[in-house]
Image (tube, helix red, strand yellow):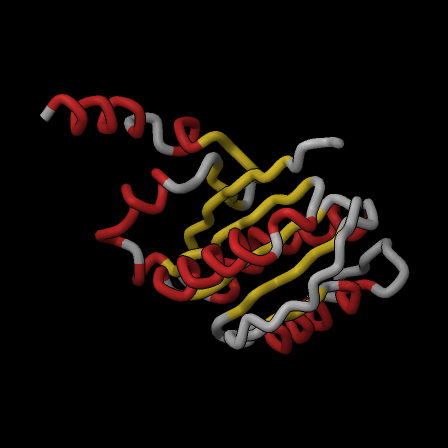
Length: 167
């Protein structure tokens, strides 16, 4: 039996538009590959994303376009279906909401996905004091350029981690 491959990344944004500027190219590419996308949004951003894609007239190359995205709001009720398709789960909200959603996923869903990327999207205003703690829980940082090792985005991260361990 193949082991599940789970990758966690974090994203930091200053507005809904900034968040979607980073996510849209990624969503478009993943949908083109027929990969599964689930967005868990505390702020119920489904209509905002649909409005934005209409305004900028973005064309998706998959069959149903943006309608292929599964949207979950803050109630965290997710139908569990095992899938072999690569899956991206994007979580948007406050630090507390994202922690709650990740605990739910760890307990109930992660074993259902053979290959899964979890991208936790934090609003910058909610995370200034928690950046170090957030980075500790993620393998990668997701931004407008894509998925990067956290040390590539925050070059001093490894040095600060070592300094903190010594102190």
